Amino acid sequence: MNLQAFTSIELIIPLWQLGLYALLISFFMLFSRDKHGISISLGLIFYWVFIYNQPRLKELFGTSPAFMVNYLVCATLLVFLILISFFVKE
Image (cartoon, rainbow, N blue to C red; front, side, top):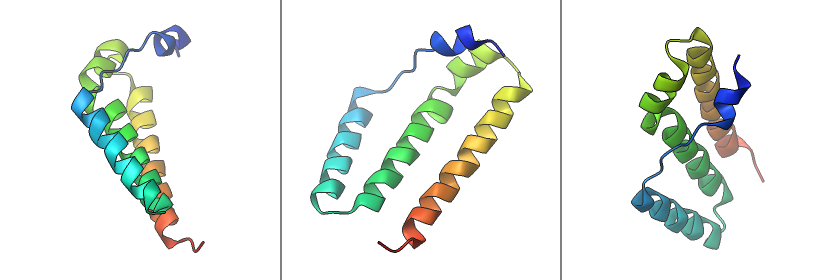
């Protein structure tokens, strides 16, 4: 796998989404809803990296099967982390 490609990735995040993210995180942390804040962080990071910037990543990695496997593993892991965070008692 080409590690140089990972260091040269530039992802695009729209400013209004970043502002919404900051507003939501501030709101949930202010009212001590840590699990919701972490879930929103994980969900938006997944969205920004794998869904919003997917054309750029496909351009960079092509039709590499390693990219799709990484995509599926990360998506599954994030879903499980979000589900686990809601069922764990504090």
